[in-house]
Every structure is written in C-alpha cells, then in structure tokens.
Length: 213
Image 1 (cartoon, rainbow, N blue to C red):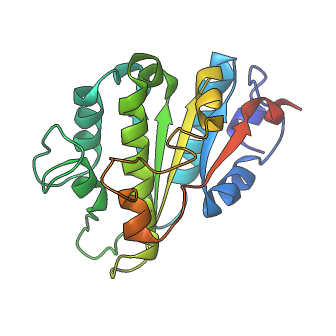
Image 2 (image 1 turned 30 degrees about the vertical axis):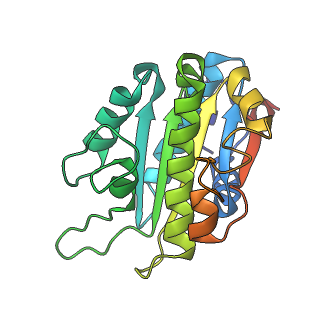
C-alpha cells in the first residue's frame, strides 16, 4: 500500500495506484486534473516519490506557482538539468529545446533510461499566458518524441505529467491547443511533425478524483 493510502488524512484510499498511472505514461504524456487542490498536491507528490524510486530514472519538477513567464520556467529548468548557460528563448543553440535534448552522465553510471517532467499547478501559466504555455508544452513533448524516434543515442523515454485544475482539463480538450496538435509557426508543416514524423502529440486526460474510489 502506498504511503498516501496508509495515512488516515490521505485524499486517496486506493492502494498501489502509482504503478497503474506509470503504465499509462509508458505510452503517452498525461494531463491529470482535479478541482480539489489538496488532491492535486497529493497526486503529484506521490507520483514524484514513486518515479524517483525507480531504477534508471530521473524526475524533473516544475513548480507552476512560480512559473508565470518565460523567465520563471527557464530558471526552474536550468536549476534541474545541468548544461550550458540557458538563454531565455525556446529555440536556438542555447535555448530550452537544446537543454531538453541534453543527457547528463556521471562517472560509473549510465544515462537515465527514463526522464519524467512533473509540472505542478500547470494551469497557473495557462491563466497568465496560454500561448507561452502551449509553446513550452510543445517543446517538452517535441523533444520527447525526438529522443524516442529520431535520436541516434541510446533510447531515453521522456514523458510529461501536467497537473492542474479545470483550466488544464479544458486546454487538454482543445483541438487547437498543443496537447492535441503541434505548434504551427506558419512556415509550413509544424516543426515537430517534420522532425519526428509523429502527426500529433499524445496526451491522456486523467481525472485524479477516480483514485478516491
């Protein structure tokens, strides 16, 4: 039984749900949502602890309450992933996508085979700047598709777990949003479709409240 399920004040009473959620993440990204802030925190925290306990796995947390603009996202990304100094832009040789492609290694230890990004309170940025949120989601999922289907390096699966409320769930349903289609920069086919051959990103909508049954 998971730690949350053992605690009498836990919002979740179902044992061993984390492996089932992780299995969903094997195949796709996820937008997990609930109108209950306490349940969202419990879900994201439990998933973080579970994923961090797995072998050959690294977990990157984005704390969305502190991400209301590009600077906030870049600060958290460069604090989590080592690499060259990060410029405050998405593309380019020192931009966000380039750092997302980076796989850091340590002596006597192979690179992680799985990398999970957990974006807590993702709808905070959605409320502040929906377009920027879409561009960042596009970068995260595009870099993940490239690592899985295009890179010549040893396979690394990267998945994004967005956690938020009703605003996130609504965005995940939007056929024009970047959880349903790649960003179109107006230069022809979307960049990530051309690079990866993947028609659209794959994001599962997951109601956190089902765990409380």
